[in-house]
Image (cartoon, rainbow, N blue to C red; front, top):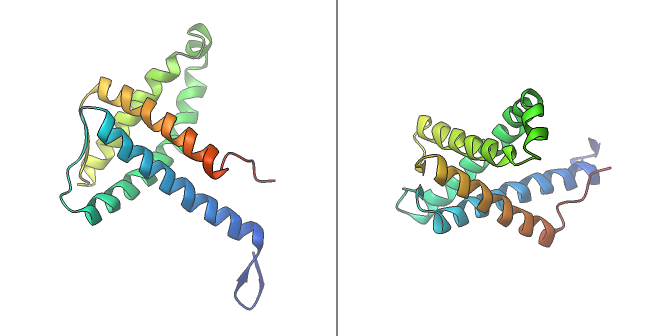
Length: 143
């Protein structure tokens, strides 16, 4: 919302900063997964290209989690209940594989080699994101 001559409303400004920080947190978490998990790689050679790739993959990750994950949760609600939520680990691994597939389709230098790489990569991304979100105080709800 625009208040006056080019100044943004503080709520919109805070939301924009939060989106950028969340994107950076996800990119750092994805980078961590490339170091921790065999089978997840950024194939770019220069650091500039790696950072760019990780930022684009982080955006893809956000889109997949925002659109596909709620649909899968709604469809597989019964399985989540039967497995006491453990099925969520499988879903997260498959979504991580989907992000890797999208990255491949867009010729990004991000590779996920198989289910287990996606499984462990999803766990690493979740843990690193959780810790960084706590450290940056991004977990608060916007109200």
